[in-house]
Length: 349
Image (cartoon, rainbow, N blue to C red; front, side, top):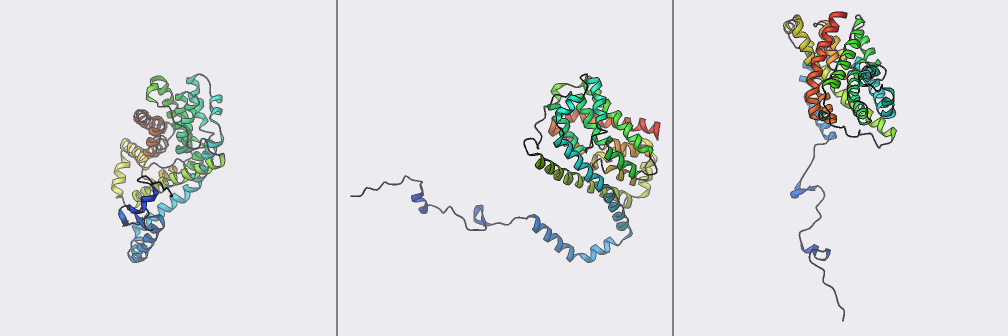
């Protein structure tokens, strides 16, 4: 007599008697048909919308206001994009191929001397602000004094060769703007480093986590950093060019004259604009040069504040060093950047 074992409840033998586990193709949870809005579908819908509304779109683009808007927008983007791409490539190379221990060995042991040396290091190490935050985090993680890391964090995006060259191209008739930007940015970077050394507390600074590219191959990390920074910074460049074009084409001339006519208000207005626009430092000079109604000192404030503190930098600094650090660091940097720009502008401009 053959003996058969009964399968325990819930096993595969009694599965057919329960509700079926397999779902037909195209079904998602709940037995309802589902479709998702993906990139190809969104692009197709956008192209269809453009084709259907091509008449009104063509008419809107032919107006004098839109023609002026497009001229400023294209000019800013075309001038700035090569510097942005070069800066992203160089900053990715430094972040990936230059070991953080190099900086620790190169800096003096005394923090008071390490601050200006780290600030001057930004003049020879190209890097946008998107790359300077993780590099500064790596410096702190390798034992570099936070005051020196802060000086490098602020100076590298503002006084490196790519940024200064872009500033010279954007202000061909004002070569002194390059010197003013270098002096004001280095002054503010060192002042913030010394201020942290004097008044900073260790519990305000959260030890940064490992960088994203650590543990990856060099080539993979390099191209991953390039793709991320180019897309990230390129998006802010487009937003900045759009804002500059809108100010030039749409804002009433009387408003701009009123804002530019008050020296104190014009400096504060462009400093706040730099924080809001969050333009990459390789491209911000072209946006500043397009704001012709404003004084050179106000433009200098835009160029000094932007690479040091803006919306994206605040988020990156909070994520790297902690929210407590960012909430204290951002207002102090903003105030010192404005003061440094005004002081330098009064002397050089």
